[in-house]
Length: 461
Ligand SMILES: [Fe+2]
Image (cartoon, rainbow, N blue to C red; front, top):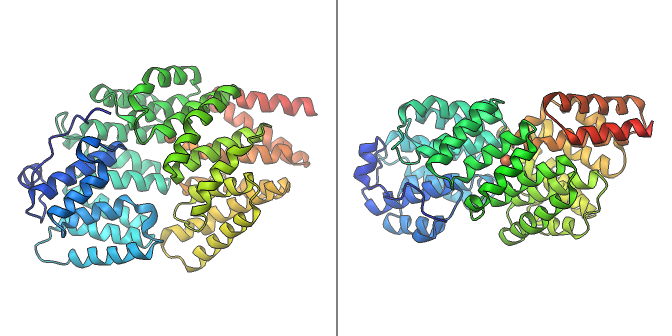
């Protein structure tokens, strides 16, 4: 992958001129922080500088007490912080470091935000980052962490507004300006402003055609507006611009979604087998498990036998059964356990989630209790062919599922799950409910999938 447009890393003085003064006097630490930040915003490892990991090592070699370096490191692995006691020690050390008198107020707020994050208090962490941006609108780290957290807690307006509030301060020659446009575009898309979202994403792509997040945003727009053919064309034309980026698996998943909706199963499976599953096996990330499991579920519900694909998925997911750090991960882990017939592991997941709710604090425990656990129980009921219970659980959650986070396209899994459970139910009212949900889907976009399912419903009656 070619270097990012921003690759002249800023010294301590450059950052000060930019409006973000660090308490560290080390030029090298400040430059490596810039390199780390640019890479995580772009979901890629710049091998010319040693990747994010290499830059972090250089950053701490230059200044082991670089507070914003510790903030970056701990905040960037947000998924793990609040369940891992080794990291809890690091958070404690960072909090102590932040008490030193030479620390700048904006840096101290960052440390406080990461501390909230480590306690599972996502909303309080977001308040801190929003607070920093009022004083420091050029702070990309606050913007990036907010972006990630608003995806995790499902607050779409936050995705859009955190960017729109600061955008007037940014200029086209500001480092990472295109990346901010890409993030803003995604916020616009998640708040259903598809036309302006796509235009904004394409502006970001004009600045950097390798901006995989902006390409991902265009993919979302095509999905949400039902322009599946256009989406396939866009992915085909741009594939070489994003297929060596960390987002490649997820972008291929979006591509496969178009084929799935169109009923082109061979093409869906082709993408799953040639891109999504190989990436998951090599990187072993939970994000790639969600892409695989959610696609396997969609295909299985339409009657396809996924064979060893479920066990491929389970092999990675089984290591995360007791993580309980993000609902959307756990829900896909449940699908992987049951899809691969590992019922004992699905029971272990349920027990772990119940224990997290009992012992947990912060916003995460509340979401797990209100929404995540019921969804997991609905999936279990579906697996046991108790479709009536699955529908009964999912019905009142319809306007609550956003709280498990992810995008509209990812959460479409729950719409389809409810439809499939209702279609399999013997109760006439559930069958009717399924047809209503499918008509709702058709009212929002062209949906060959809804047409297929509605047709089956008519034939079976
Ligand atoms: Fe996506």
